[in-house]
Image (cartoon, rainbow, N blue to C red; front, top):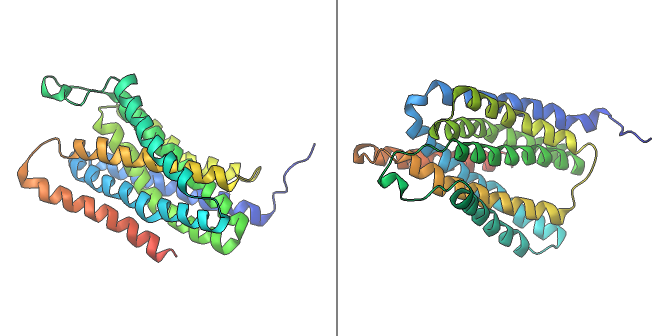
Length: 255
């Protein structure tokens, strides 16, 4: 039986994904500590997810499409499919009707769990991204790893914010935070055993872009503005802008 050769260079992705673990966990702890400011955190979170899609994932799709010669059309179709899949899952499986809040208080912990699982899947592929980058070169790997570590802090914050916003218990929220923190490590470790074809990676990136856009636009932002207080609306919008700006700066300075 053949075993992979665990040399020092191949273990680099795992080393950086361990740092990503602590970065994600720290972000989640911040969300627990400032839960009374959850509307501001959620607004910032929505901007972060918008920024991740706009300034990291989509540019990666177009760059990968250009270097491989594979059309980006499939990734864009996958983006729409990801958005509609999560929309359908929430509306039909969870029976989460848009206007039910007009006539009764509602609690859907499952929505928070599914949203957090989507983020965990994204975090796992962050780890895969680190591993693939190191397969290209150590320099590329370090650049990608720094970007992932920077925004994984927000991933942890996002995960806990979503769980608490949908009235999940502290125990469940901590469990999902641990899962999300471990996800980059699992993703990076998996790349020691196989390589992902560029065509499939493009489809993944598109699909999870749709996931993240749906979570930001249809889940997080409405929850952030649920208090409907005009006095804080401007501040909430500013937090969303700051979240997007944070990811833009991370993506720009990590190049």
